Length: 386
Picture 1 (cartoon, rainbow, N blue to C red):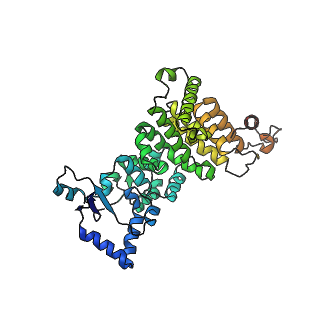
Picture 2 (picture 1 turned 135 degrees about the vertical axis):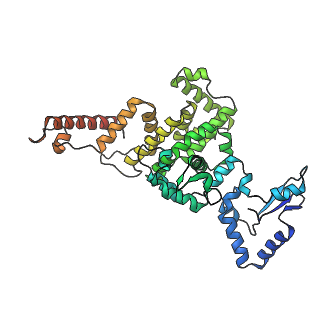
């Protein structure tokens, strides 16, 4: 914001000037449209400064002032530098969060709803179906006339634009610049691919929101890393069971560090996510976990019974989605369960589906399809999977 006043700790104004500060203060004293317009502007643009609108609302007479240490700096240089756009001086992680706060939940829903099953975020952003989402980025000021050439090629996002979206989506979901700074880039990139599926799952009930669990798991992982508690490469080679024991021991130490209050010890989903992180799960596999999570959530909407009357809870769905994404047999069973819920009825009708004799017009192939559908349904129901 180039109109902000900037001052040192000794209240010497190096960016902006005294008259500007005095004018704003006088405007508040007078009241009226000028003061209200200034307050509204600060509320609407709070995200640029790492704040929320409610932070501004809590102040009686909010005024934007940057306090800087001028020791060892050329005052003439500071005058120029302090009048540059604020966002240019943000560190990248703070920028991710600030830009993420510009995107509202409606835009996220448009993103999640526009993606097809099994479609990657990168493919979606390159398609015409992403036009509505790109328009929402423009309305929010994420992409504007100043940076359009950097992020757009015609009406489509270019590769830089797609990367920008990935980063700010993670900033939106985590909403914590310190946590982002502590988390290694490869892990951030892995979750960037998964964010659209997280949002898709949320459409089927508040219980499917996993944002807080993700923040908890990432914080616990970073604590393990900081205290040298992560499994070694030798541990990882010994397999999942051994890594699980190492992780359980580390969680116990984290519990001691936080006097038993760290939420990773209290949230089953956060604990499962921590296991995923510790196992060095790659970006594609992380995306597959949440893709499966969104699929299963669709068949198990919260507080609604499905056709069979035994809908899984969000915790059940998350556990099963990890199994389905990391284990080939579990994936096969999950696919069979979905087919059981929405089977293709053979020419023999429901009788054929249930394994009874189809009508005389059915072919031998129809009969086989009916038998297969029946076995699939019964096996899935017997396992209780969705």
